[in-house]
Amino acid sequence: MSRDQGRSAGALVPLFSVRDEGDWGVGELPDVARIAPWLRRAGLSSMMVLPLIEAAVGQDSPYSGLSAFALDPVYVSLEAIPDFSELGGEAALGDEERRELERLRSRPTVDWAAVRHLKGRWLRRCFERFVSSGASRSSDRARDLERFREQERSWLTDYSLFRALKEAHALDWWKGWPPPLRDRDPAALAAARESLEADCRYFEYLQWNAYRQLGAARREAAREGVRLAGDLPFMVAEDSADVWSRRDAFRLDATVGVPPDAYSDVGQDWGLPVYRWDVLAARGYDWLAERGRHSAELFDLLRIDHVVGFYRTFARPRDGATPFFLPGDEDAQRRQGEAVMSTFRGAGVELVAEDLGTVPPFVRRSLASIGVPGYRVLRWEKDDDVFRDPRNWPALSLATTGTHDTEPVASWWDALPEAERRAARALPALRHLRDDEAAAFGPAVHEALLEAVFGSGSDLLILPVQDLFGARERINLPGTVGPHNWSYRLPWTIGELATDAFVRDRTAVLSELGSRHRRTSR
Image 1 (cartoon, rainbow, N blue to C red):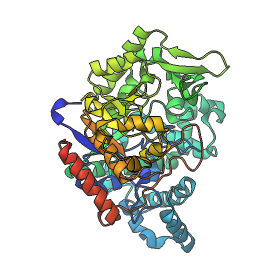
Image 2 (cartoon, rainbow, N blue to C red):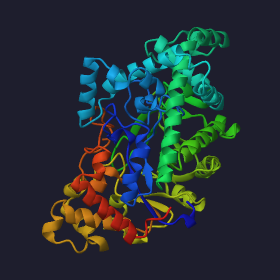
Image 3 (cartoon, helix red, strand yellow):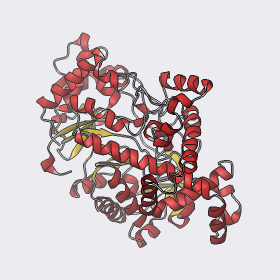
Image 4 (spheres, one colour):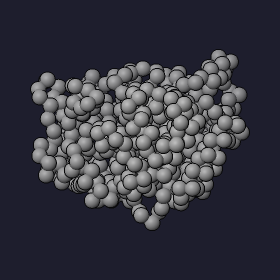
């Protein structure tokens, strides 16, 4: 982080959580620009999103990607596609489709399967209109699509064929495809691309619209003084275009996980493939460099997920053998991690490292030495039973009240054992709380906790959107699978953020906190 950029505040707002009057049951790429004026009124100059990459088939988690590069078409705005207007827009929907759209818009959470089904049907119709109208052959849009295809060919060619093949094989895992396609026989791939050309073009059309919409939204948000912060997942799913097309860069005989810790006696198995670090190193980490360059084109700030995994990966053999770290010794781990981080920094995007969980001390020392901020999460910043004063947190850090994997601060406070609550109340920002105020989360506790993190020594502050409002809905409950995860939506539309009395009050409070603690520059 550049020290001359000053102190700032921002919000973690999953794009799927944004609600707008005309959406299709999920936040959309243009919403990045639409919500920027509210963020700026609240004194927030950064909007961090969760990964926007396309989720693997059957997955809602944005951290299990079908591609490291493709944006999820579910976030594409139909209203922003000229072909949709030419089809008649929403007026062209049938009665049953209109009823379904209203149901999706009114839901408190995202119904991923239903949203993908309805929106996917109309995205396909938009493409068919693009082709049948002649616009795909000779128009400014056609020429722009060709430029996009050429600029992104390093990943788009394999991705579009992978998606077309999945459609042709009933979404089956690539391991179940006929061996010539599974093993990428050149003649079989050429024949498949020829026979599936229309489908390949469709998936390229979707990515073109997604990229153009995100680029326009980011530029408009920047004019409002709001930066867009992205999230680079550590790994993609095994059933992904990247693993299929770059098989030699991944180990499929083991899966990525984390070792046992205070929260789990057996650790975690994420079911994701393991990097072949020797292969990547021999190539100068070219694939990771491409991911960095790609992210720099989309975002102003980049969160590196599970940064410790780039220093040392915890591999769990599929045959049940003893898990192990790659590389095995600390010196090699440090060299590898710093080489990878240097690769990402070479893309020219500002970095922040998610360094939470079981992280050896040398990793945080390494990150500090190369100028990459790590996380400071209020609830976890303790020495034994004593909370560390946030005012003493290092400037080179990101302060926050929680992450997408934690319960909101309101639920955390109410679940605290009495002894831990007393310890938290010893923090300078909380000492004024009366016993009756501190007994349960309410306005007084909320204001005190916000005061603590806004007043922290960290140059960068990014708070989960629920914690801005004192809400209790969580984004994800680790170790569980179901519709309760990755589906939270704000209760207000973007328009209501400017008119709702409660939101207006919170906006004023946040703006005042940012001003008082000099978090207004960026």
